[in-house]
Length: 162
Image: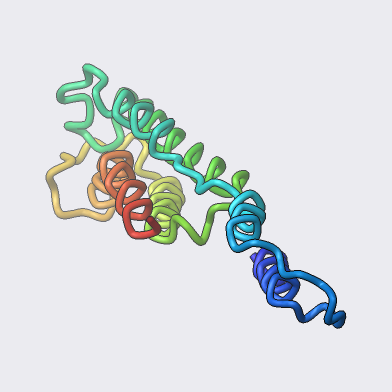
């Protein structure tokens, strides 16, 4: 970003005649604006790729699969959901767009923390209900809602940045 700012300032100084010579004619305004516009990278819009993927993983036909927080079906489902959330985090990092997606990155960190806590609490194999007021049910709920909330966070971050 600093490189772009320096380029813009330099182009502006050159265009206004601060190059030192009095015989220099300043560049036309349109040419300067075109040079600045071409040096600015297009904004990354990850929601176009990832919202459909997040929607697909939440739309799986798994009604009632997580009645018990640690059942094999629930563990498999939570793993699939969490995996896509992690993939979005990787995509944000690889595109260098962490500052464009602050809410999304914070939510991904929350999902990661819930996943680690779910494993640390040894929730796999637990027979308690997902609706119980227990730590495992809380972690499971965070993981179940992770992709749905992330869809909203991605779009909110993009609308805020535009």
